[in-house]
Image 1 (spheres, rainbow, N blue to C red):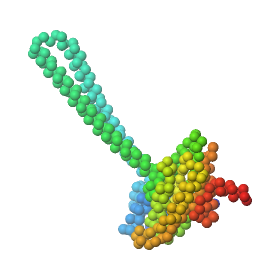
Image 2 (tube, helix red, strand yellow; image 1 turned 180 degrees about the vertical axis):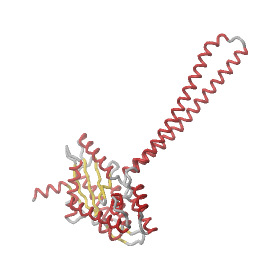
Image 3 (cartoon, rainbow, N blue to C red; image 1 turned 45 degrees about the vertical axis):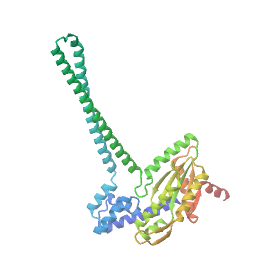
Image 4 (cartoon, rainbow, N blue to C red; image 1 turned 135 degrees about the vertical axis):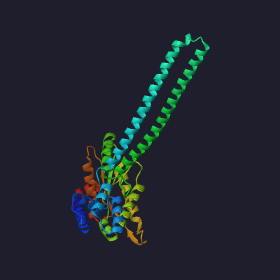
Length: 350
């Protein structure tokens, strides 16, 4: 069953993490375990790349290295710090804009007062010299108002530019928080949110919705034989093939480790099966070459399980049925697509 497979896989990651801690003579703090567990699973590409680089140059990871790696790649406050930085810049820009608006309002008020005075005294100005002085004063007041308006306009344009930059930064942070770095697919957080939204949409419209769960066959053996870097290459290959096989409104994500999930809104069972078969056959058709040596590593295959949304379904139920179909495919020889309908039919026959 799926839970048994998860148990075996996670135990392997845990044992690997402990071995790395011992090998580098590091304190077995929870942070140490989290870092090396994540490294062993290969889920955080940036972390693995940084660790491999340090090991290549120094041969081991020190406590200081580990702390820096954790802060950069795993700390839960990492994105929060970046958001705080953007928030501070927004506050500073708003304060500057408010100051400019206050200055402009004061200048406009002074100019209005000058105009009201002019309205009162203009009929009394018979002396040419007094009239000339009055006109000079009004020209000066008008120029000051124009300068103030120009400054405000420039400040507004600069603030607009700054806000556009900050918006871009926020979008980048949001993208990073929802994207798996290695595969550039959506991450687990993105999947959970998108699945809830897709279920709500399907419930509202009555349209069909499918969920695919994909697992790379014998990935651990492949990873252990050829190393993490080649394993990462396999993950990217499957991710790219998945991207190329789905429609723009579909949501492909890295579900965890070597598992992928694809949400297919407005898709029937037959359409979902076609997508799954396209992914399966496309992955199998590609020969894998080791970049460093050009060695032909053969082909890889994937197993895929499919579930369909039913009225009143939950995300948990939908995932559980796709998971059951996936592991039925793996138990029956791998490199297969199995749907929950197939499971029902087999149960009825039995």
